[in-house]
Structure formats: C-alpha cells, structure tokens
Image 1 (cartoon, rainbow, N blue to C red):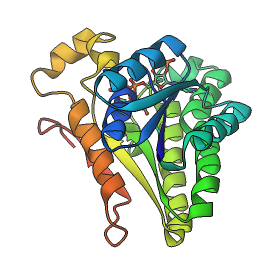
Image 2: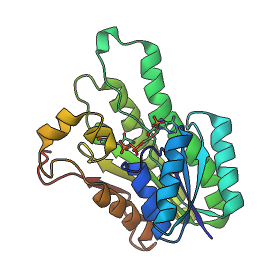
Image 3: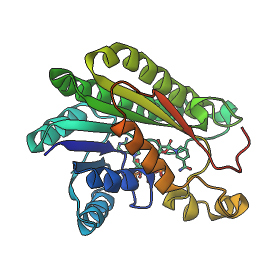
Image 4: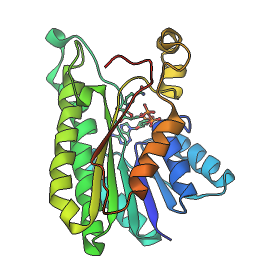
Length: 240
Ligand SMILES: NC(=O)c1ccc[n+]([C@@H]2O[C@H](COP(=O)([O-])OP(=O)(O)OC[C@H]3O[C@@H](n4cnc5c(N)ncnc54)[C@H](OP(=O)(O)O)[C@@H]3O)[C@@H](O)[C@H]2O)c1
C-alpha cells in the first residue's frame, strides 16, 4: 500500500486533519505527522472511523533528524506517493520591537522545514521517478501586509522554493505544486481560536476545508500530461 505523509497536522478540523482523511479515501496509508501526539491520535482515530488507514508520528518539521526518521518510518510502511508540507502557524507582530529570534522561528517553521521535508521525500520519490509533493501557502506567499513581514518572507520563500523544485524534479516524473490559500480557513484555528474574525467574515466568508482538501486531491490525481504547479483558493467574497 502506498503512503501519504501529511506534516503539520493539528486538530481534525484543520487543513492537515482534512488532508489526512481525504488522502486515506484515495486508498493511501496516511502518516499524520506533527508536534502534538494527542492531536495526531485524534486525527488517526477519525480517519480509521471513516474507513481509512493511518499512523501518527510525532515530528517537529524543523528538526532535521526527526524529518529524516519520519520519511524512513513512512517508507517502511509503504512507498511515499504523496507528501504535503502544511506546517505553519500564523506569525505577526510589531516590526520595530520584533526580536531576531521571532523572525528566525517563523522562517524555521515556514521555510526551513519545507526544505528538510522536500529533500527527504524527493530522495525516495526520485528512486521511483514518481510521486507528488505539495506545499501549503497563504495570502502572505503572494503579498506582504503590515505586521506580517516575517511570515511573508518565510511563505514567499517556500513558494519560490516550490517553483525551483518543480522545474528540477518535474522532468523526473515528480509533481511539485503549491497551493495559495488566500484568506482565513473555516477550521478550528480560526473558528475556535479567533471567533471574532470568523464572525466578521460572516457566512461563506472563510475558505472551506472540504474545498481545500478536494483541491489537493485534484492535484494528486492530475495526469502527467496536464500538471498544475499552483492553485489559488479563496471564497467568492474575498477581495483580491
Ligand atoms: N488558518 C488559516 O486561516 C490559514 C489561512 C491561510 C493559510 N494557512 C496555512 O494553512 C496551514 C495550516 O492550516 P490550518 O491553519 O488549518 O492548521 P492545521 O492544518 O489544523 O494545523 C497545522 C499544524 O501544524 C503544526 N505545526 C506547526 N509547527 C510545526 C512544526 N514545526 N512541525 C510540525 N508541525 C507543526 C501545528 O501543530 P501544533 O498544534 O502542535 O502547534 C498545527 O496544528 C499553514 O501552512 C498555514 O500557513 C492557514
């Protein structure tokens, strides 16, 4: 059975959680990877309850040895055919009082982790000349906004790296794509974490988890003769 590694899995009602469920419905054994065991266990239970196969592996995407071990463990279960880099919490703050450490932390999660994960998954995909590697982007991948300088720098860096990898590995049969999620997501992070933001967004004002997961699976299923490198997703209400 082929495997899918989704790194950056939090609550089930989140991009990572939904991707685990949708990838399992494609017949893949899902490796749900993230920092918090209890959250991963809850996602794996839900995926199994929905008829899929899944394994939780605790992994901090910024720690090289852990990422190497994650891919090794996934390959022991089955060949990695889908890999998604989804890690990245929102970072914002006052620029003039911002510590260098804060900027670096944001870059580690949003960019360096993407490099480590891409390097390890591309190694095993290259051996087979097959596989799909997807990256989660945000509005910040495309444009900077006040208070979001580090997040923008990090997400734009991830997007630029994804372009570079697509041009390098596409000729070797590996599909590399980047998904820009342009707006708040209708998941736990916003609905429970920032309820006032969700209220202000109003009905259909947040990007749906179903729509996001469907888009990733669409990329995964694309034939080699019609690959997209980038998709952008926003609600019909979003100004852009
Ligand atoms: N939420 C939004 O409105 C929004 C909008 C646009 C784009 N995005 C992008 O969507 C992705 C996340 O989607 P989501 O907000 O629905 O969250 P989610 O997929 O439910 O959860 C993402 C998880 O990534 C994990 N993570 C953070 N740092 C990590 C690390 N170093 N190693 C491993 N895992 C790590 C976090 O785990 P912990 O729970 O342990 O911290 C978090 O729960 C991010 O790439 C984000 O930039 C989000």
